[in-house]
Length: 433
Image 1 (cartoon, rainbow, N blue to C red):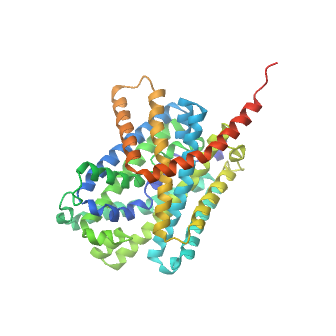
Image 2: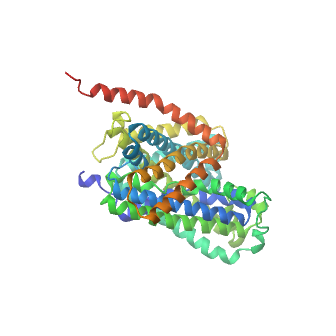
Image 3: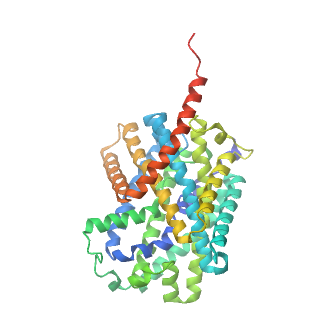
């Protein structure tokens, strides 16, 4: 490709991975994890370990397969068009529905700093839509512009988050983690519940493997960005969330819509709470910028292979698949607009449910694809792959029946498109004389 189309370097890609992982989850998860006390650390540890193993699988595949498209490319290479479409469709739905969730989280964070902006459901929806389309405009201006935005927003949220986590250690009360398992449920059950909750915080570990067609030296850059970005984002997220749980009583945390800001305000005053609210707003905007860039690249790869409509493969003068970008943003906007009468929390939960359900299948099939592709791998890599496979299945089961039902419905919705595209491909084949 031409130079103006290959614009993402090592630092931009690392920033994109970190920015896509650290979004809204880190600022709201402490409230959901508070009932589990110190047992949440076990869930965090398992989730972080599982996510890191998945990141390694993606990194190894990026070294072997030059195709862009991430999980879609790996699934198609290993199992053919049918499974490739299944994964590509599932991940594409995941991305634009995640954008709806992140845009809503942005509106919620902005409302915590500027209450008038989200005083009514309509205002909240308009704020979410505004952020979504600003990020769409940035991506339309070119991948380097989106990459530069990723670097700036990642620094603006990562540095304060790490500083908060380190300084907050001095204000942690050991009693906040007692008893070890306040739920009194079996420790395996409690740990599984925590892992299911923290899964949202690690979505995006695969980010670097999707837009490799616009990455400089992808077989070297992508694996490094995947592993480095996952480690930095994972440790920072786990540290900050765990510190918040130790700074406030569990009943106070559970009742808070912005637990990290509440903890900062409780310890350091109103100015600190407002500052965390601003960081959360920047964090959500940065994550939205990265995921909007991803949504067009996801559909582009499948369209170039003839499995998605060809219109998704059209590029503008900057190398941006602009129709895929606009269609995805319109779908995310529709999801926001169709549910704007709900509260921001309810709309955020609905969008997360939709996104998580459609992410787990690509993760699982990616691990299986690695097993099929890298047949001569060393024993320790196979051990990592076994761990990633177990984690993927465990996470899939742990999400519950409702997400799995949504996932099945969305997969069935894509079947007519696959059948149509297959027929179009068969018609183009030369007929035997």
